[in-house]
Each structure stands twice: as C-alpha cells, then as structure tokens.
Length: 329
Ligand code: 2RA
Image (cartoon, rainbow, N blue to C red; front, side, top):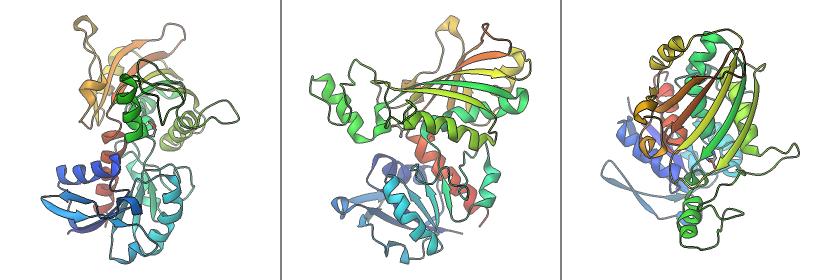
C-alpha cells in the first residue's frame, strides 16, 4: 500500500531533510504535497528523481486525500494548521513544540515508547532534538535500575536554530555581527537557547525536563537542565549525570547500552575513542561514551551522548513515527 504524504515547512532545513529521509528509507509514498510560506511558493524540490513544486500553505491545503502530514514550520503554523489537517482526516506528525505537552497528543521516540501511538487523536508530536537523543539510552537504563534524578548539560549545534544559526556562525568567523543570536557564537558559547522564563530557565531547558517525564511516563523523575549553544554546525552533545534508585555494576550498564535499540557505544578513552558531533553528522544513531561511575553519590553514573540533531533529532525520528503509523493503517 502507498500513502499520500504532505510536508509543511518543506523548504526549511528539517523539511528538506524529511524529503531526503523518506527517499533513503524508501517510505511508500504515493503522492507528495509540499507546502511552505508564500515566500517559498514555487520552489522546486526533487523526490526520487521527480520535481515537485512547493505550494503556499492555506486552510484548503488539506483538501487533497492526504494520509499523513509531516510538519516542521514552527509552533504558530502547527497551532493553526494541525487542527485543520486533523479535521480533514489527515494524521499530523508535528516536529514543533506546539502540541508536545497536550494530553491528547502522544510524544513519541519509536525506540522508547512506540505503543503510545495507540492513543493518538490525529496529532502526534516529535520531541525536541536534545530530548530525543537522551531518552534513547535512558529508557533501558530506567527500566533496569530506575532513574531517580537526571542532570542534563547540553552542547548544541547552531543548525538547531535553522539556517539563521549556521549563517551567524559562518559570518561570525568572518567577524560579522550576529543576526539571530544575541551575541557572537563564533569562538564563543551561549547559555541561552530559546527564551528565558520567569523561573530563570530557558524554554529549551524546560522542554528537556517536561518532555523526558512524558516520554518515560514517570512524573516522579527529578530533572534539571542547562542548555548551551556552541559553535558546531551539526550534532548535539549532552553530558548526562544519572542517579539511580537501585545499585548497579558498570558491566551491566555496558551490556544494556550495547543491546539498546538505536544506540552505538563509542567508549575507549585509552585510544581517544568517544562520541563527537563530526562523527555523528549524517547518521541516525545515538552515540554513547565516557561511561563512568559518579563517585560523588551512591548509585550515580555519567554519560556523554551525541546525535545528529537534524536527522535523529528531528527528520528521521518524525519519519520513523510515520512508519509506525502506516504499519497500523
Ligand atoms: C535548538 N532544540 O537546538 C532546539 C530546536 N531545534 O535550537
């Protein structure tokens, strides 16, 4: 069976990667409909050697017999158009943060909580990129030793901000002032991703905290986060400190991570082997290394986790959710 797929935000970095991943994974696409803002109308994009013209997104865009719509056009667009698509019987997989915490919207990482897709009401949310790459290794460890507390410290690539982030880095290297970021990102790092909230945290930090609880379905987890932008193009890195309820031994940790879906261990420090963004770029796995006991607490460990934020962090995870869906249709 083949399916009619729409992409909303088709000309953005994630939108274009949706097309690439659909092709790479040979997703059974019958017809492809590309939508974006009026300024991108008329853009021609290729899928499987055929050229498709981007149309302006309107309230009538979902009149075609579209089965699934992949959204990555920002929260405002998703807030307005996801319900319109849903009303037309389209199943929406939304990469924006608009619907992630809504009680009727499952927040899915296929390696972690695939069964949650069973209760979708027409909209399914793709988690934040930095959250996705963390819950993939955390889920099997949580099942084995019951996580009590998580401390996230992230080192996030500028592509997380889209083309504007990459341009600020490239221009910054030439000494030009940034347009997107409040300060230069070249040869610098910014402890500021998304906006600051009343509680002194940024929205990005609160997303990691709240999304982790929803995906692992454990609202007793104690979590804190500091998210930082660094001058890297592709690939988010996260230092994760974990405290478990139960005792563990490192051999068991290694065995669990070695067998964890979507995880590759890169951990041989005597040969300078550890996850790095330059090695994760262009792949869909989550790389885990620097695995070591945290001697400052009773049942603690430290991990270093790296993944391609545009692929596994956004486009690939979204397409994997669509694959879960068609296996049910
Ligand atoms: C970022 N995670 O890196 C956010 C959104 N992609 O900017």
